[in-house]
Length: 188
Image 1 (cartoon, rainbow, N blue to C red):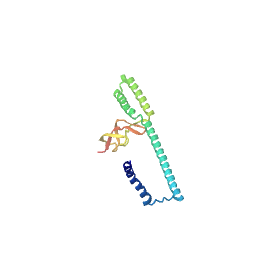
Image 2: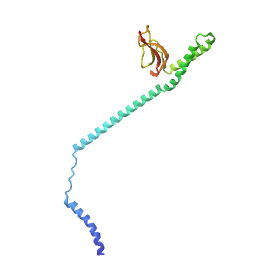
Image 3: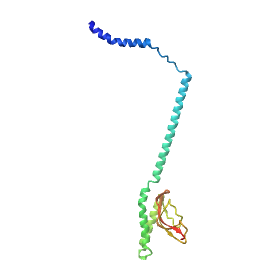
Image 4: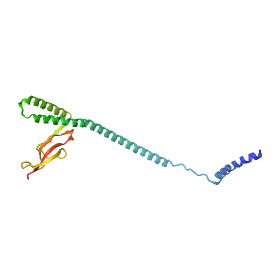
């Protein structure tokens, strides 16, 4: 058994030496307690940082809430934009039909029916803030008008709308379709 105990003692020998070296060879570190002022300053800094983070988080939440409210408002105001844009050719065709009838007495009843339909249609669009842009005789505005051509006109000043080829429309002040216009070049 003596032979078996020797290797076990040899294995434990390095551990014992390390303990002796650690205890005797190295002086223990002296850990000093922080002073009360240091602790107070550290706590005050932590409180200030927490307050700053709270204020920033509150401001960010207000910004998110305001942006969401604006997005909802815009969605409500302009929800009809695509639908109204699809209805504009119907108004154009009703106006063309009225122009095609002219003053024919045989078609007078049909013309009046188309005119009443057009009036009802336009009034319904106005209820939903779809407004016509018919700039006959006004100055050319590139934000609302699209110039189809320019013609010399001796009686009308330059950059005035001479003719409206197709009316434009706005929805709540936002352009749905520009008015297609002919603009005067002025005198030659």
